[in-house]
Length: 364
Image (cartoon, rainbow, N blue to C red; front, top):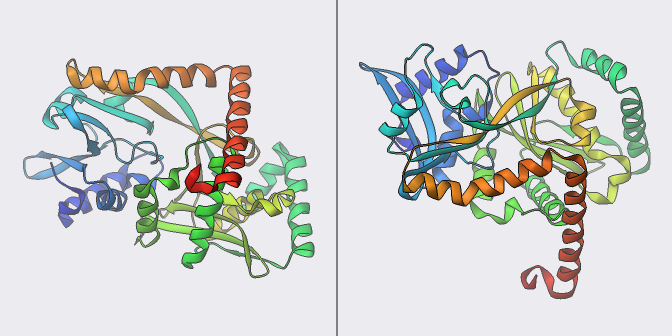
């Protein structure tokens, strides 16, 4: 059991080799560099290393809480989770969890083919993806066939944006810290506007993004993409990329320009730049959204749930998470309830904004 920073280079190379041999897309959230970044901002981050003789044959990045409660690394934020194991290792979840002294292991974006834990999944979700393996032109032809009105309208708005606001410029890998701060501000405003918890109000998440923005590794590199009109940034996205996957994470835009749909324009340019870089897949993550339905070419399964063993730790996990998870799943599975919940969240967001106008963000 090691802290991420204590992994030796041989162990890291073995981890990367196992990921390279996997049949699932090489999502950068599953790389040792992501574990390193989380370890810098989360003191309870650990990596369990499984050996066969003197050879490392498996890794489980996770976080350990009180009474042995475990959860996936950066639970609630990371978009791909699970163990990295050699095929045919002959290990079961009970053995691994006992060796880690864990009473539970919670996950909310467990990737496909995680046989150790999928039997414990409580729900399966779709992660929406854009396939640009055959080039951007092929992707555009797919959009013309499946979403012709969407593509035509978005491209028209892109042209109008360039004429009316300023010449458009797209930077796939922007290094300007000011652009990242602008993105965080837009995203925080979006969270408040929609009545959701502001992730960037949590210091560890802001520090994690800052750390990953400085991470440059072949299979895990922080990537800030920005759409400019003139010299002004109007939409941006921060995510992680490997050689073959761009994991889309935090997209946002300046609402002053919302009539031009700058977020959609940004995603089209990200798809184009990814294809030019040799990246074959953009992973938009789980969670239904209209823009994902318009942009996607396919879906990948991800799982939510927890492995538990009898005891106080498992009971504490159930009491703290399971009722809320079940309620959320119940609502999401019923469109009318989901729509009503979305309206309530937006109303809460409007109330929060009105309070901020009167008292300021601190008073609210």
